[in-house]
Every structure is written in structure tokens, then in C-alpha cells.
Amino acid sequence: MAPKISRPKFPKGYVDHPTSEVTWEYVEKRLIDSVNYWLCTVRPNAAPHVIPRWGVFVDGRFYYDGSPETRHARNLEKNPNVTLHLESGTDVVIMDGASQPASKPDPKLAKRLAAAYCAKYESQGYAPKPDQWDEGGLYVFTPRQCLAWTVFFENPTKFTFDN
Image (cartoon, rainbow, N blue to C red):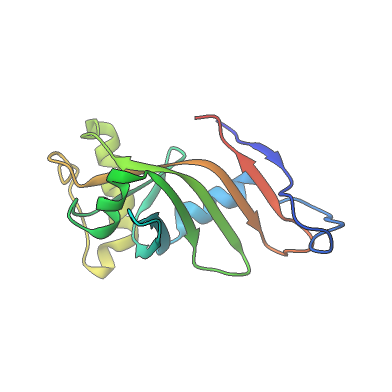
């Protein structure tokens, strides 16, 4: 499903005359190809908690794994709102959405997730099998909106998703 495309709203003087847009295909490729992602959750005391994560972008969602005992997983129990950011501060992708524990993936999805993880991380020592998440430990981030640009003054673009 393709997202709706619009311009982000900025204060006067920031981006007064944009000349182009970033395509969703470009953003999606960046999300698929990225190795490191920054995930920001909210602590129960409303303070942000940001951590680097490994994960895979499959079927319009970001999947990542980890123990339910981690700080970010415990934060999600109280507040599922999350921001996901790629590493670059100039070729920018910022996604807002919700994250939650995923149920056991069906066998087809589990194979696709494991293959995507292995393609990215096997050389770094992480190669999960499709049954890795049968007992839990898999999380899924569903985006609500995304801001992206490659040249801030030229092409800031907002993508909105109907989930």
C-alpha cells in the first residue's frame, strides 16, 4: 500500500520554496538496505530512551528482536509510540509509529525475516533461523508517518500511512 505524500509543515524561513520530493521507493530502499537504525521509546517517567537496533524492513513494517526484559521493551508495555531514524543526518528518514511484540510469524514470513536478517548480519555473527521467534522476542514497528529528505531546502517530503 502506497503512502499519501505531502509536504511537512515548517516555520517560515526553513523551507519556503521546495523544488522536488523524495519518492517512497527511494525511502523504502533505504529502510530495507540500512544496517543500523535508531529507535526511540518513551520511559514511564516520559523521558526518551534511544538505542541503536538491528532489524529488517519487510512488507512496510520494521521487525526487530530482543528480550522483553530490555528497557525499550519494558517502555513499550506502557507506551507503544516510537520514532525510528536512520543514521544519516543529511539523507534523512524519520518514522513515527507504534511498536509492539509480534505474534509468532507464519512460516512464510518467518523464512523471509530470517533470510533478510542473514543477508545483513550473518557476516557480523547473527543468523537467526525461521523458528527463532516461535516463543516470542520479535517486535514489529508499524509506521504512521515518515519525514524524508536528501537536500533539506529542496525536497522535504511527508508520507502518511493508513494502517
